[in-house]
Image 1: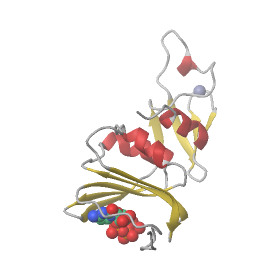
Image 2: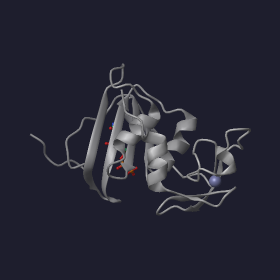
Image 3: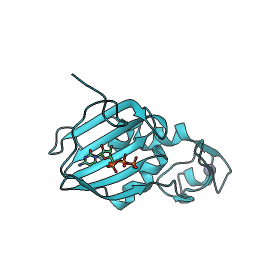
Image 4: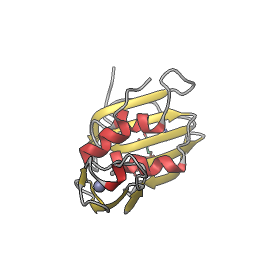
Length: 165
Ligand code: CTP
Ligand code: ZN
């Protein structure tokens, strides 16, 4: 059945062409898939590994998607739910690009302030939300307008809270 291979601890085939998102914090693999907007009934074959051994971060999740290259604007979102992730682009079975994601210093739009009375949440002429990063581990952002803190949990809920279909 399944032996131990490399740092994955499970035998999962290499992909020919597509994307491998590696070093995802445990439990965030499905959030990453949601952010990428891949349909589970579409043309992509998807492998999801949850809670496997990692040399670098103890345990991790991995997502492999055949036939998909992530859009540039998705990389910041991935960084927000999986700050430790590495995005590998695979062509012809080889990793041709490897990029460590980085939670952006500033986030404009994308996230919503947790304070219902914040100026960014007014019904009439709301201001575009703006946050600055205050910490990477744990990930935390501060609203530029009211000072409210967005925790990693708030961020994951906002970006990946909807159901997959
Ligand atoms: N991978 C894959 N299919 C390929 C090539 C690589 O599924 N054709 C996967 C590997 O299993 C690994 C990830 O993509 O999970 C990155 O591959 P590679 O750079 O070869 O591994 P490492 O050197 O261990 O990566 P890192 O240094 O980022 O930990
Ligand atoms: Zn605010």
